[in-house]
Amino acid sequence: MTNKNSSFQERLKNADRHQWIWFAVWMIALALFAFWARTAWVLIPIPFIFDIYITKFIPWTFWKKSKNPIVRRTMEWVDAILFALVAVYFINTFFFQNYQIPTSSLEKSLLVGDFLAVSKLSYGPRAPMTPLSFPLAQHTMPIIGGRSYLDRPQWRYRRLRGFGNVKRDDIVVFNFPAGDTVALNMQAVDFYSLAKQNPLGSAGVRADVRRYGEVVFRPVDRRENYVKRAIGLPGEIIELRNDSVFINGQFTSNPPLVQHNYMIQTDGTMISPQLFKELGINKDDYLVSERDQLGRIIESHKVQDLTGLRSEDMERIGLQRQDGNNGLVYVSIPMTQAMVVSLKTRPFVWSIVKEKEQPGLGIYYPIHYRTGWTRDTFGPLWIPKRGSTIYFDTDVAFKVAAYERPIKNYEGNDFEFRNGRVYINGQVAESYTFKLDYYFMMGDNRHNSADSRNWGFVPEDHIVGQPMLIWLSLEKDNGWFNGKIRWNRLFRSAKK
Image 1 (cartoon, rainbow, N blue to C red):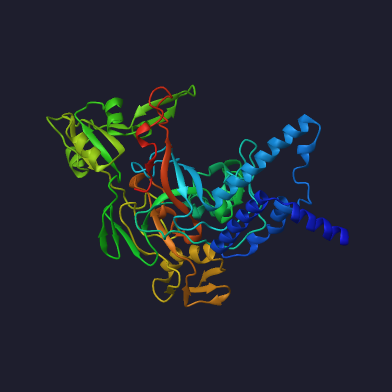
Image 2 (spheres, rainbow, N blue to C red; image 1 turned 90 degrees about the vertical axis):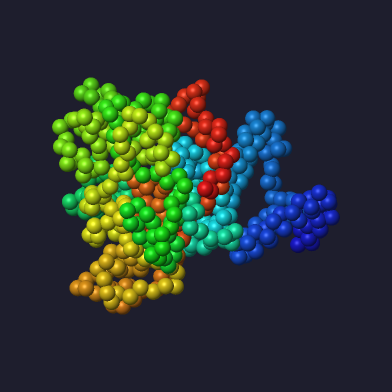
């Protein structure tokens, strides 16, 4: 014991000023982080840091003394890679994360191919919920495939202090709520919509492994990342009337670059790819791809020939007829209002009509209840708020359809509805008080966005962060030497 104490005291005495300074820096950083995280668990590494910088009983860098140069070089790489992985994991978890826009649901505010720096600090970073995971992999290992995380341990939801809360019209990155259950062969479609479309429901999807693939469950923070705009906030009533959003009965203006699908009627003239490009309309928006009998991909314009269509049918859908000529019509072309105004100036364009969806054509939330809602006419629907209570006294069937998922899947209760009565955790329930805040998210490309109109509310524990900056933007339709990089979008704000 005397020798050990002597050795300890000698090492303390031999530690130079540089070592003590670095140890002090780490202590201050850990103390600040513990205060921010409101937990003392982050102080556990203190003895190890003390040994690394001061006492050095454990030979942390033993390989530096090796006489074998191959061992030294290999361990230098291992040391650098491990440090980088830990640093990336820490930064991604608590500060910033990269995200790439995969779909056109937010065009023209954010474009397919935009690479975003997403701030975790805007709304406060979540403490890790599935802590044992591979850095930079959301749920699947790159190259080799398979899960990139371990199911256990699972930690409860807790959010650290941030700079603010989600506000209306914020663009938000979040974990896809309906992505808790995934059919691996059809990950682009949420499991509940697949079950709705299958005659045998969820059992039919699970049984047809060849078509749908294995059905797996994913923890909250391992679900796919989505990005949409927060339209409805906790406790509000949202409603869409003919494409216009009303919050608590009051009209709310659309974002400036919101898009809708239009029919474009011309005198028979085909619109050139160059004009579409000038307007900012992507190839995927005006072309359809099909395979011929030889398996080749054939692209054609989204055009319908109106020859033979009766004049009364033309008038009914808002199209014109001139000198016995019906012209031709492009269908389902997404455009902003500015694009519509610009295109109307072309002499060969006869009319531009916003498309309307008929009830029953789409799958809209709540998917297990017939509402007759469409993408343009939706609601009214109350958005749950933490501490608010719903009562199962009137419209019980609708309330069950709308709020069963939050109560059961997001807040962890057993939920049953039988014989007109609601049972929560085995007890008859006349009411329920929500534990979380919820949000209603929508895309700016209103007619081409799978959002809360389709799969419901986004719980607060699914919120990841707010896009702050576009640091790279690539146009998939162009080559590297032909406008692949959208230089005018680099280092622009991603918050609008």
